[in-house]
Length: 411
Image (cartoon, rainbow, N blue to C red; front, side):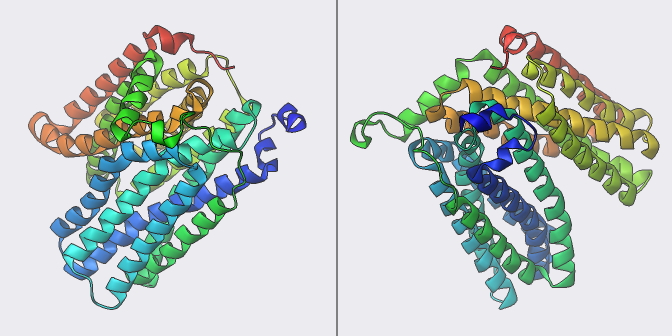
């Protein structure tokens, strides 16, 4: 392990068997989750033909995810995290297999679709904090930055390929068979997590019978989260940023694209953002600034540029490079954030802090998506996009003003 820690090259973490299993498992898990997003939507429309019902089924998955996320963090700080990931993948596979069988056998009903979607959301909530907290258990501390960059490259690749694969599979074989194949993907991810060979998971030192209940664990995680100004201020920043991007790019951006340059070009623009994120992950593995979090937070200012462009100059030649560089910038921040948490939060509380972080993101995105349309209807799309850009800039500058964010340095 000491010899390995001296090699801090980009690919050095891949020499560790446990890290390879984790990276492949997370790639497959995000691939399967992305396929779920597409295939489930087509399945609901095939069965019910109703956009309203589609919203209910997809919303049920999101609701279960948000409602149980904090409890997923508690579990991941109490139990072996690899075991939790195996259980989460197994539960997700069962829900996908159930959905596939119901669709293929013409036995699907709205209540059944909602129920199985809830189960899938619960599985995601159980797995997310554990997966995020596993990386520092697989590699030496000196390899945390390249390890996190490689994991995030795998995640980005899984999400990008999953969207295309889900649409292609649903179109060629039908949503039922797409969901059946997705169950197999979750099983493969679970097998990867079963192959993880880790030291004992750091956890509470007190015997199980002396520990407090779930509420006490949640409060302990909350104290850990709020005791560090750089943690809660960045999460607050990204609550704003995620709401702005969800409403400004996902909702209003799609509308601008539809009325100007078309959906095909918009898909290319978003795809180039994903390509930028992949390259940004590789660069983040190679370059390690001492004040990485401060640098990463500052780069988020670039996310305001596409919003301004959509409002003032919605031209494909301008948006393509802007979104590419935004993808790179976001990934620089993402790696810096992961490493900062893993180096500074005690391992036995790390998953709970991750769960509070994820909760802020998950709550913000639907809020942004829901309010963007009504605000744009009242104020106009261009004004709303410019206002969102200003809000993002203010939130980011306020975060950079926090001493803890400016001073935090990597080990």
